[in-house]
Image 1 (tube, one colour):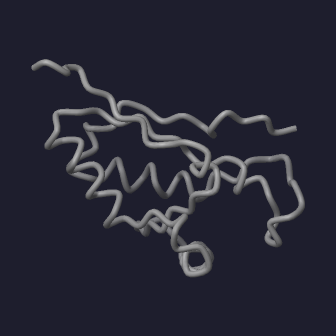
Image 2 (spheres, rainbow, N blue to C red):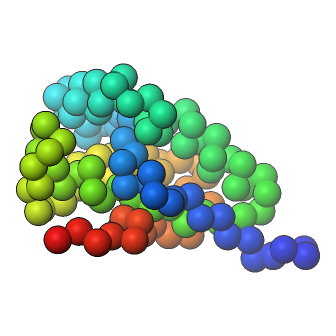
Amino acid sequence: AGLSPLFIRVGGSQADSAIYNMTSSTTTEEEANRFANACAKNPQLCLTSQRWEEVLKFAQDAGARIVFTLAYIRHTKDESGQNDQQDWDSTNARQLLQHTAQSKYANTVFGFELGNEVTHK
């Protein structure tokens, strides 16, 4: 086709603040509650499993592959969101990756990038 291969980048500045509200068989109750509460406080930054499936299906229907930016900055802060812990907490990203791997649209994902233009010190 005329636009083949087509890649869609899902990311940008707000990608570093995103929260993934995914549940899987490996999600603990504490983790599920933590991310559900974070999503309730910031619904515009929340990616639910239903919305992620819609994005993946859209890509498949369009014959596209997705490059997705994983949140970095949000997951280097402590619970207050103020203090930098330096070490990236990959818990939420692992939940998204596990959900994606189990999705029937998993093959639409070309790759993931960690953070958007990270200038983290």
